[in-house]
Image 1 (cartoon, rainbow, N blue to C red):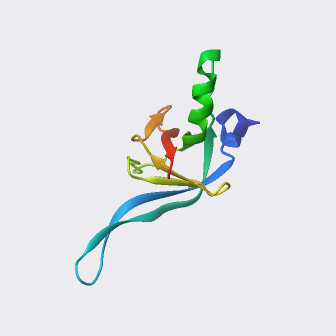
Image 2 (cartoon, rainbow, N blue to C red):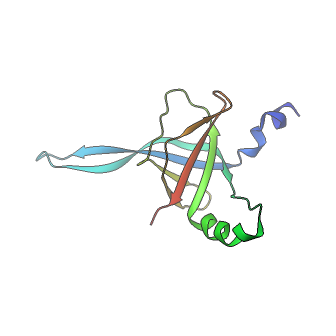
Length: 117
């Protein structure tokens, strides 16, 4: 019962978190790649809700491309635009579109993403 009050049960998805890195080859050419920071990390996928009937169509199209994620707070993890999140369940890859926001003082992190094309 105590875990349910803390919201532990809502973190029912597993994600991978990637950060961008520069990779250099033998001839000193560099390109951008992704480095896995966290694997199989528990997360909560927030579905966008609609309050008014006028917004239903907009929210329906938004839900296909835009997803908000909540994860447990991790000290020192500064997720920024350019990072990526992969939903392990669906296999879909999402680009982070805004810097992560702390929720409830070091309890959770909100991450806004869009479906990668």
